[in-house]
Length: 212
Image 1: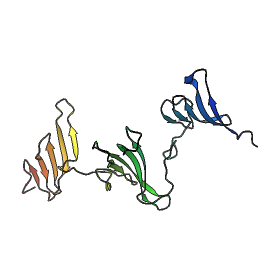
Image 2 (image 1 turned 135 degrees about the horizontal axis):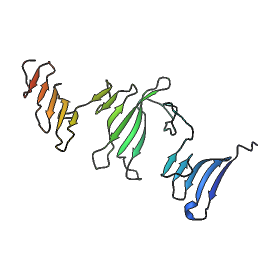
Image 3 (image 1 turned 90 degrees about the vertical axis):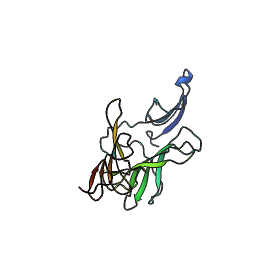
């Protein structure tokens, strides 16, 4: 057969336990190594973390520079592929997930990217907090961002907080309430300082302005 196409599985017992390792090679090219400390290197002979994936090629193009791919075996709208983060290696729900969701199966498909977290300390699934749609729109608190940045106000009608850069930590909140009015809140005030009604009327110190 081709002398350049052989492979090997090698266990090296070094001069001390630290230098022992297991590796898989093809010809003179090492592809995978497991160190004595249980660290795995793919394309890396001295992995410093539990898993290190390295590509020696010089790549600069977006979409043509990936060194790791997570993929499913079938494609259907709503199908998801996720990476989970958890302090446990047992079968508990992850605390944080990064994922993709198929939104179209036309031709080569298209997908949204999302981040989910959980605030509860019980073993519950995380909740989606942010999504980047296939079109590039970013949604925070919404799964259907219709603009380059879409933020869903919370139940109190607050969406954005702008902090003053000093120790006083004063701030302004901006948000849209359930009536569709745009409000500006100064620091910890529960009532808005400035209100823009959806009718176009503007109120300073009042939430019921009668004129523009």
